[in-house]
Length: 93
Image 1: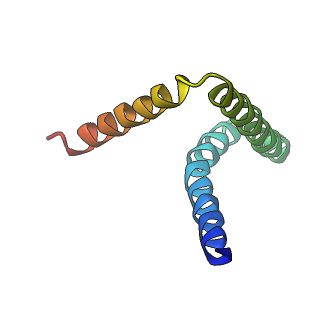
Image 2: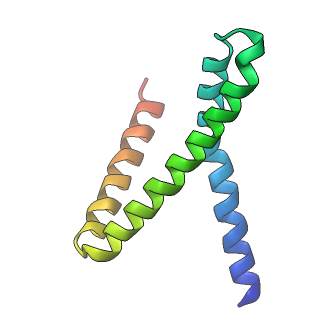
């Protein structure tokens, strides 16, 4: 049981790191357009804001899904539709 929990935590952490790469690209592209003396504060502020938004919206979403029973299948369907669209756009000639 402990091994399963550790593997699950590692998979969640790996997924989270992979999903944060787009945030890093967006923040760094914004920071590249500001003067060099402001880049570090812009990067740090962007990372902190992205982390805060991720935390807040995750808490809001999980509370909504927990309180409203029919929202879980709707959220699952939305994920399937988004995944299908991404796959369609990727494999489309």
